[in-house]
Image 1 (tube, helix red, strand yellow):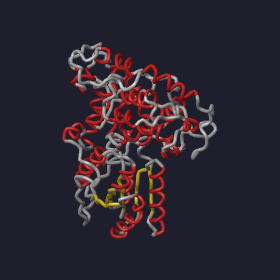
Image 2 (cartoon, one colour):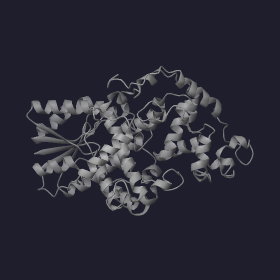
Image 3 (cartoon, rainbow, N blue to C red):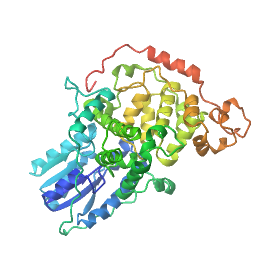
Image 4 (tube, helix red, strand yellow):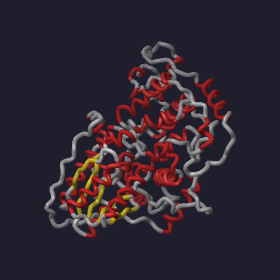
Length: 481
């Protein structure tokens, strides 16, 4: 008998490990609840809730195939080997199948499970699934991991032209096993239940993920490049949460994008090409996680930036977290995050630069806060984005490039529609005043909106000085430095 251990691959279609297990014989599935580990990893309550809701949908579709889904608890991943071994003994499992996950803790967990099972004569198979290319297979001429996205992307394109990753056929129905599926719990101890309004924004299940992908590639992908930076427009695919939980695969996304673009990677619809690049950015940051494991240990990719004199400013940090900085584009973005579990990508960069440059607060504070609130929280992408914005990471923004939130706001929300949606207290201001109510004073209905907590010009100079004072080291050092 075969066992698939589900993790961030909550789907029936194009699931490498599931298909491989089912091809070998009668199969059962297991999911481990790990609340203590999730809390340690700062996984957002809304994200864990999203996992459970998707698990419920997946359980129903696996039932149609007579594949029972069992729920077990390994509060901490240290307990995973013993818990899985116990289940394997009960069910007389010959082999366990998993899709690879990345990050230091994930790798250690899987190695420990494999070793424990092997000692009992149970084989452990792991498969490439959540990426298009295996980490370590896209390398520079000197056999090292890429540090610059454009070079990484070039090699990926060459590889994709030669060989396109195929979609994996979903398994067929198997003979019924004498094993009942376990009910999927509604909640997990220690994690709050998100609001109904948040849940309604993110319906669970493969059908919903596929619907979003089809809608995007049929109707919107052509406009993606021109509209993706404008938070008031529906210019993005809204698939990130489904990708992070593995409810849809990057292969399915790539195939759909290519289909909408007559099979072209680098020509045709500029929107499709831009979106494929975004899939490759996601890929790049996962490869960075494996090639430079220090980034999953809360270390800067550029070790010399560890010497930055970050400010200890709890009041400023709290104002940023609670959407009361007095800068409307920042506060509107943070309200969007707090209420929906998601933030528009352009805004992620603007609020991250504001925290790390204008407030000179350590990027790790922002990274942690995002992970605790994002429904699409993904260690590699979140860390990559924060380190890019704070100029401590790969391919990062040069330290002297500091977004001005006011000009960003005027450029990307020129009518103030996004701001007014999330900050109704500013609805009385016109499209010029709404970006900077401080200029208006307490007039025009903005009396209850706070003054800016920082002077943008002076804080910019402070950030430049802090970066200039760093030791001038260009090496990114060893993997574990």
